[in-house]
Length: 263
View 1: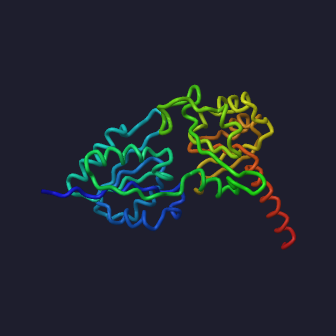
View 2: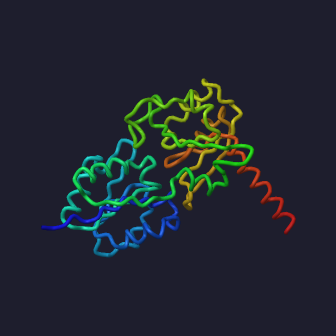
View 3: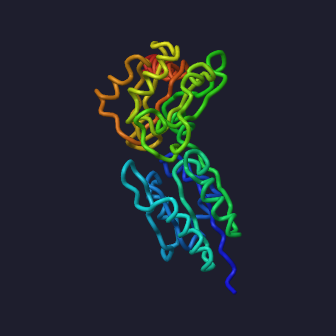
């Protein structure tokens, strides 16, 4: 009887291939089958054995290479063949990655699995943009939230549940990091303003964070939808709302002043 192979649910990090962990690379090198997502940097696949089977199962709004049920079926089937399987996900597999669903499916069948954390996009993209999610005297808390449950949103990785309580989030934390919110930016802005978030609150837009295509823009909550339209913001992108977003401009000014002095 063939013993089931180990399934590694792996976080690939936010986009820069150098931000993957050593443990994740080790799992990738030992994999016989790799199921990878749309936001995984494909440079990482170069670390895999040349004989490894690579299967794309990415999802974008309205276009799914596979359903979630199909992905879970593949993980189970390949494991039951005795193969070492890596499920490679962008960011962290347990932060809007549906890794929990896959772990439950594997556990229900008695399939051995491990979860290898990754740097989630909120932390990676914000840091790469010069935006600290917490900052002494300004921000002592942050929350990661999906925009896909906003009115008009699609049922993405964070969808399928009750509406987001923007009335609570507007005041409960200092910094809000919103995933999958580009298509619902106007609605998100309207919800936060309706529930008392100041229109002057600094708000950042980070597109393709940590990659060579990264673009970062900072505006106010009241005007951010106009900026997004003007720069033609596209996915993948994060929205960061809070006073900490203004730290980016302070850093840029200080760097410029230092460069002038040194020059």
